[in-house]
Length: 139
Image (tube, rainbow, N blue to C red; front, side):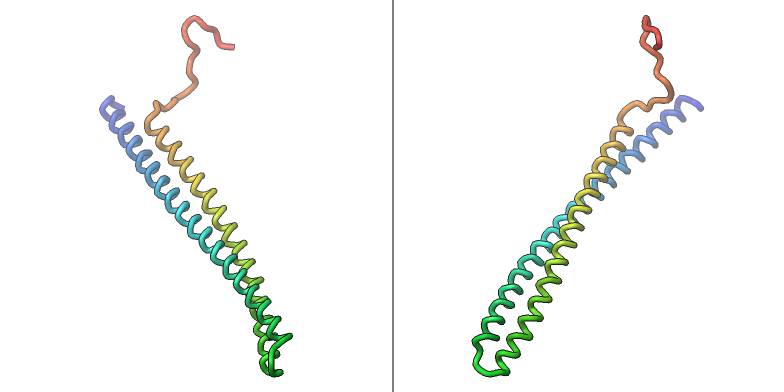
């Protein structure tokens, strides 16, 4: 291979690694945005579960203290629905929190891969064992 071809191959490799590094950085940014979105969903589900728990408690009071039998019965059933829905929201909040952690981990992995690609692009590749410096013997 001529020295010009070697230089072109090195330039092409460097450029490909730089493009890969940038693509991994973009992946990292997208994964962080995804993690933030999942975190926001988790927090929203927690707030909704808390609100549904308040509905449940209010409905319990109405079921005990309400006027007509219909009103008490309706409040009791509505409270049961609210309690069930609150439990589902708590599970959903936990799921979204897990997804947020996973996306954050993926963002870290993508950033690490971007750094490795950038380093490979800008550091001289090692093409074999490096001989010891002059005057030193190998072990």
